[in-house]
Image (cartoon, rainbow, N blue to C red; front, side, top):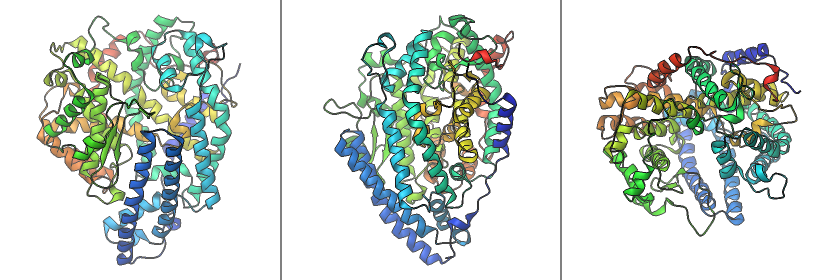
Length: 623
């Protein structure tokens, strides 16, 4: 039997390392000696003009490919990305000539600092090109991977892709063996091919980061949060949330034991990773049918009512726009309605992943969504339009400030809106839920479904970059063992079959092989409840936080407008201070804890006879 090379003691030492790590940058390699204000101002003015044009060309090429997937459009997109990469590289070299720490104007200093911290590196062009090539190769392997269906695995029909096929199996199947086969086949199909490429890529990325003064590439990612104690604060946030997660874990485990039996799930152990309704065990909402507290109560889903009332994709976006204008925020520009794709085209292949687009020219903003008339897509329209609102509100900022206040802020704000939209009260106010009920059992069911989506996701979102940062800082040994040690420590899950260093299970997640930082999603989950609470307070809401709907509150809209308009122009603690009316400048887990308080009390009572947490035995793996 294959087992992990790390003991629990090693895991705890591993975690302590992250807490102690601090951000101490040597700025000498990312700034020069020029302190001339006029030259710095002129450089940024010229950079802005060129960068806006380049940004627009890249966005247009990406849009063209995403909405008409052809090899020609793909080549055009890659060509534009390469040109933009060269421009960014030249810009970084020019920006690093300035000693921006000695520039007195705070706006000029901040822009130069951002350019310096985002610098692509001092490594030769050949290595930079190699990085881009390997990254594209890994993405291609991921995108083209197919597996055979469980029921026909001995035949030559092997055309199941991750989305929608495998995602659907993991969400809907309750067959232990089918789930195991699907889980293993996806990882085995791509892991072995991606592993050597990923190792080489990580070495190159680390070399690039070190060439401009960072200890490693992880430190460069963390630098964008502008907080020397960022990692310690992350661990403190997790410590505050962990008790809720462990109670949710224990309750869900008991329900899985009831369904699959003690031979499959140990009553006091970690949960096999393939049984939680998701390929990566990051979101458990798909197993709501197994764990819902009061199954006789009717779940809220207004999809049928939307169809009965003749909703169309266009009407769904108009309803979303009306939500934001009711807050006193901006209507969508004319170009939005002309250029967006709100339904799936029938005459060409498109990427159907919902997304909001800023074309960098202060007037062209679009959403791409293959909208279907359903409650899920109604929530998605509001989410994507919240991103557009953010774009509109910081449109007058310099290009370098046209981002969220920190890397997690954009997503947090968009999801905070959904916390209002998804309430029974809001659905009733817009005429989609007539028989509104608000008794205790309904509220617990509602909060359980939210917890399976939000609380269950937190340790996954936290552990992905803990693993990645450890690879950057400590090397490539035990890549797979370290991944599963963190999964056990934070999520309380284990692989359903034995894994070793020939496997590369982190590569099963797109954000890992695409080198997309992930800690922003952990931040955004916590921050969205902090934003929600601040807006609810401004709206005059009275009652439990999970019942709040900010619809038609001009005061909530005023606060949203103020924080969105700032973009990335100020350090994010200043934005949080404005958001909370001066109460705090820190990301705070208390509003999230408050939101789920009724469910937490219910879980504590339900789990009286349960072991809270998990123990690990060797036989847990490879049953």
